[in-house]
Image (cartoon, rainbow, N blue to C red; front, side, top):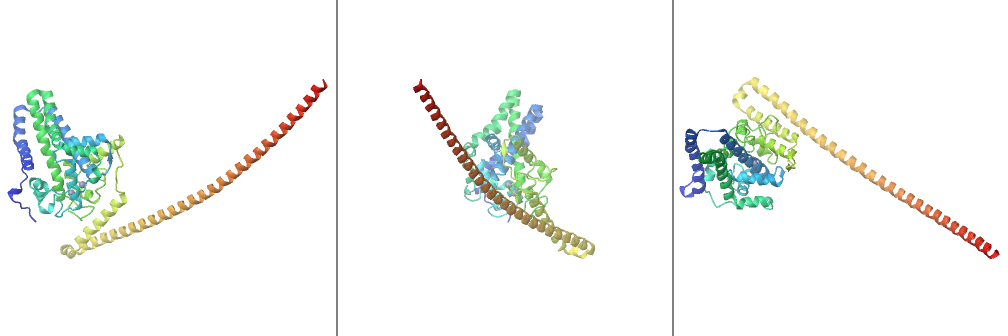
Amino acid sequence: MPFRLPASRINWTNSSFLIGTFVVTCTAVPAYLWFYGLDLFQVLLFLVFFIATGLSITLGYHRLFSHVAFKASWPVRLGTLIFGAAAFENSAMHWVSDHRRHHKHVDGELDPYDISQGFWYAHMGWILFKLDAEPPLDNIQDLRKDRLFMWQDRFYVPVAVGVSFVLPALLGYWHGGGPGALGGLLLAGVARVTLVQHMTFFINSLCHTIGSQPYSDKCSARDSWIMAIFTFGEGYHNYHHEFQHDYRNAVKWWQWDPTKWTIWTLAKLGMVHDLRQVPEEKVLLSQLTDTRRRLSVRLACPKIGANARLRELLQASDAKLHELGERWTALKTQYAGKADALKAQYAEKADALKTQYAEKAGAMRAEYAGRATAQFDEAKAALAEMRREVRQALRLLERAASAA
Ligand SMILES: [Zn+2]
Ligand SMILES: [Zn+2]
């Protein structure tokens, strides 16, 4: 259903900010570049802020807080919360709540950025307008015990303004005085905010519109390597919707997923842990199932049906895929059976060993006890003998003394 809303429902704060930053980026930024040019410091400042805030959204807001795809130490949580705020995409609490609802009700009425209401609604329309009363924040209970997460929600506005605009302006001033401050504010501040925001919005709009569906067609989410380049690896959105708790969005080594690489590196540095990863066979099985589904759709097409050779080819590949699927399931059952048998066997062995050791231990205990008793008896006998010998010696001595 196309998106239609009365003007009375405009969210003025969000709309002014989104449109304002976009307009400044398209006007004041080129004017600044025209008058002052671009130096290396400003380029580096822009890149640092772009990567820090972009990654804080994909790695922090999305994969860590929304999906709990891994666990992170406090410096990682604090860093992503501070720079995540500087992306001006609301506090992590609201972002996570929206995103969890997106996954739960994807393409449905309760999906906050429902693509079925149109491309622009999913992209930014949902932010510009107020639909109904704010949905309840009832799906983030697990994060309420994280004090940093709660702190960021409370101080979201000062943190966002401070890190997003004041900090780059101050750094620009430190390097190049007044023009430097203006450059920092416009480039690493406003232009960077606009870019990071639209990068995130594209995940909700383009990643539900263009690309392939290699894992599932249950929802509109799609995999697109082009989108992955612009979104720190989030473009593999079909995989992500199928396996949302995986810390990876791209599973192939050659696919572009800098967010995954950063998480992996942080894990090697001991700053994050418990990375969740879907077993490879599960990924392969869903790929296999989806390929079969696509083939059967093509087989049903009358044009292909008319082309005997193509139909034969498709049928042959479908039969092959069917066979592979069957073999896969059989292998899985067999392995599961084997694993169960092995588990039972090991459990039996472990029990046997336990009984054996218990028996052995009992015997040993008895043996030691016996040995100890024997030794005790021996010692007792030896003492009695000694006592007898001492008494005898005493008697001899006494006798000798009285004779003297
Ligand atoms: Zn999505
Ligand atoms: Zn997600």
